[in-house]
Image 1: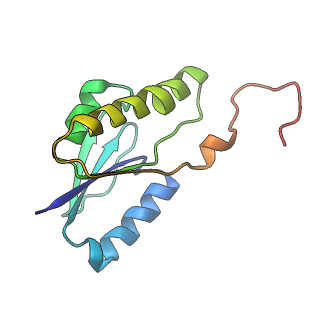
Image 2 (image 1 turned 45 degrees about the vertical axis):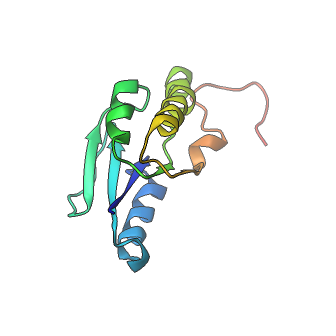
Length: 129
């Protein structure tokens, strides 16, 4: 059985580094990677599928999750508070819900990146330590 790994945030620093190593590891030779890409995309690869759209769109997430066995959720953003809520909260909810009802789903891995640690787009009156 071919396994399909959905990666959100695949075009980011962590995602790109992960994918390169993932494809090189013989333990994962039976995996296809599906990347949910919003603003950027990845170079073509024979084991890569691209789904274009926003993590905050339930229909896009459901399409991306079709036939997926594993999820690696790396996506985050640091633009506006509304964008952060759409990706971090709404996007996470749609991923978890689609995973819950999927007959093929097996594992969900959540990894936070640097944007989760305080990239602020507006001034703060006190120092951030």
